[in-house]
Image (cartoon, rainbow, N blue to C red):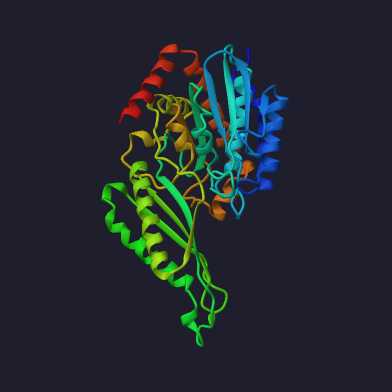
Length: 390
């Protein structure tokens, strides 16, 4: 009977070719038509039943194989950034595909479900698709889920900042800046006042909420001798606490509304993505992944057991609130700044092939251990229930 290593030999070339195609497509979030089409077609060819589009998102899919319990979810991402796959999502999709196909050859009872999840980077109408899926119950029938991400270290578990992004558009009235400024309504002044006011709110946040505020002016007028009649401010706010973030965002919106009213501008507020939550880790799943990595001489950093503060955000966190979720970070280089050219080059699957295959091996063996031991499955659920009480 074949084992995981045997199937990896059979499928290695297939996995790398899939990843390289998605790497070369480098499609932005919500527009990953080639990437999602390719991976869903390959899963269909492997015997998976594919639903696509999924939940009214053209580049999302749900692919499943098998019968009976348990239900195991794998999260596939494939969106790029404007500078290409500088976050390595082409490797995530290859990991999900390879893990799913190998497990489909080895399980006797249970269902392997791959979720194709667009726009984790928050671009376009499907921004934060996992948060959308989670809110609509897409993961509620699963026993557990595993996600993956490339990194500059091996790690298990995850921490994430809750994240909200919004856009404020100020509509004023144009007039000549020198001859008749009194007839204009300066949208840029309203924006700048709002920018400074939002910055001043940092002091309102307790230190243990670790508030992060990022802002850019996307539009601020067309000519310096014309009173700007339109200005656009994009704001990204993060915190270690989802509940605090919701209150903070509400305060920001009230503040900006009052400033806009004072300047006499019309204000349009647009949320750019669903709010990403903080992450609820699952000790049992992550400890098993750690153990399987150690069996192949990799000693991963256990994020769950660390006191480090989260520095990024992901819609995978929203999944972790609905179903037990494990996570593996795969080393593809050293000292790699996220979203950089160095990261993009490291994410070429033929540069990262050795560790990508090791990650698939460890994930497959972890899943097989969990589903073949009812006591471990119970512990996975118990961890989840205890985490949600906290």
